[in-house]
Image 1 (spheres, rainbow, N blue to C red):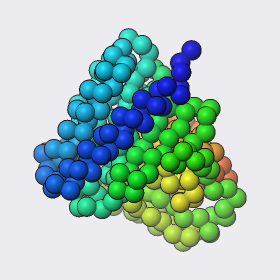
Image 2 (image 1 turned 30 degrees about the vertical axis):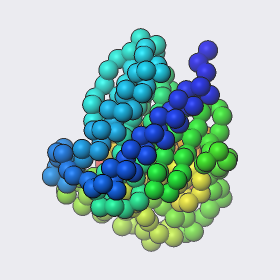
Image 3 (image 1 turned 90 degrees about the horizontal axis):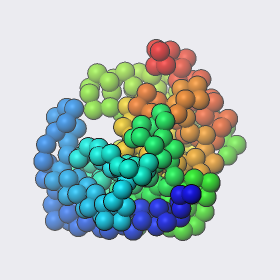
Length: 271
């Protein structure tokens, strides 16, 4: 039987060390190493250094496990477990000095595919705010060791909703058009730039719901577990697992409202 408490301890220890390295490199000055999907989809030298640290520490602690990181790719293991890592989620925020970025580490059972894996433990650390969100499957979610819960029974017109946009301009335009009908039905919409922290924001009630398309596995692996263990309904379209196609997190009635509203605004989203 897998000891999720031990896995969480490893994830938390490594994430704290990695987050401190990211914070120090931010103080020293950030430089762009390369771009990815577009010129504004960037990776910094710190992203690569932080991921190398995480990968090394996990290999020391769990040499038989697989690894799937944003910057260095995937490596299969023999244990049936895989670590899914975003070394700096919110890289553009990080580049600009906006204190909304985090180290995200999750360990999942199965292949590195959110449609089939089972998340066992996850940690998201924001070093600028000194916050550590954590969860184990069936064990609830915490913020700096204290239990957290999603906000419940919020009417849509009082709901503060988080979202994100893609890097490609044409995708951003389409996403913006889709939320136009929604924005008049909710309290307001926030776009904060780090999916892992948005999901943790749902978990602790800082926002009431969150949705986004285009998330990669490392963007949401830890945050989805933390939100779910805090009582959120987290899913893709029509109850499918969260994935790049769609990720939604909120209290169940609000999640149902958001999904219906978004489907009405852009029916081809779920095609």
